[in-house]
Length: 229
Image (cartoon, rainbow, N blue to C red; front, side):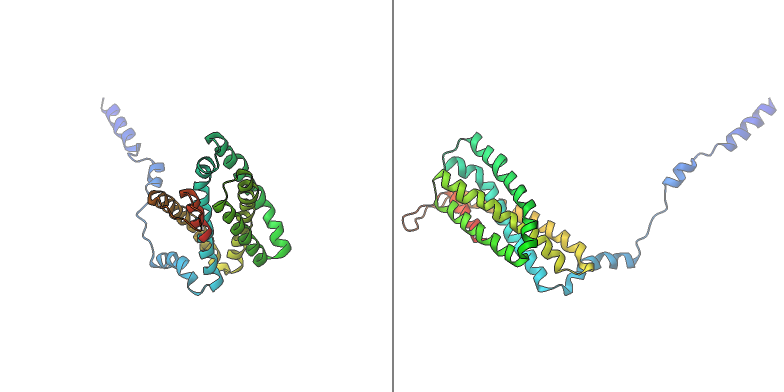
């Protein structure tokens, strides 16, 4: 009896109440060194000496992406309300013509940039967008709106995307590059948020005014805002 009891105590003594794997998982409390905090803040302060062209790239990205987002939110309603397309046709034009055209032209835009340079590609895209948005503001003829507005706008928008990404790389130093691209994508989110606010505000405002006999609808007014950006 005594032997068995002693044996039981011996077995119990060999059983560790906390397994080794659990001990490894429970790490001691980690303390963040002051140098780590300074390193984190340095990721942002590294832009302190950035070139003026880099800040200009950020601003242009905000304007271009806000204009694009306003247009994108307005497109289906404009096609159905102002141009007379039914909801299915308007959705198909945006989903199966506008969006794929943007993708294809963006892929081709890199070759154009290599051929004529960043600056010329940028101003070419701006010129095409200006003409295309102007057509979309004033016309109510479906064929004209699609051929001289929607399709060229996809080309113009596509030309801007690789230019601004390339400009971000060119005008940032190696130390600034990571945070610069992070800011570019953050600006896209800010532009999308701003476009949503503009879209709701202009529609709720419901302005009625005439310009030389032309009375723009709410959706054409949104295109005017997009053109201004």
